[in-house]
Length: 197
Image 1: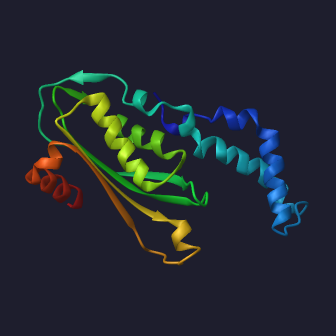
Image 2 (image 1 turned 90 degrees about the vertical axis):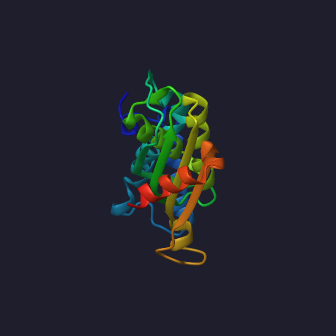
């Protein structure tokens, strides 16, 4: 399976003309001259961008983990610093950051690149960071049935940096803990120390 950039939101593709018309109307309503040279292609560009940044609607995140492998390894596995980009569902403003995923297998492992693809499938939708974090943990728990899963997501939200309270540089951290990580403080500490290192 290729990266998310190879997926297209077919709903956007099918509704291209209507979306372009709405973008043009929004530009007009905010006071822009929609016939100005710099804006002539903007509705088409925005629509093409939507095909890509909302590609997650075309993917079942559970299927992204793909084929799993039987493996006796039952120690901590971490993929950290998985860069993501998403859109806040409250303001349709971008937010972005890094996801860190750790799990303790119980006989099944996933290819490491599949964890990055899972992050892409979940984030390429209108989202909130809290839901991203929980969805990743829940899908890992459901598909791999590990002894435990821990997910930490950090993000910078433009809806908070460039509008409203206008606090650039502030970062939001969220975590989701499943299975063994809930009860085993040593496993939680190991995960947290390794993602900081």
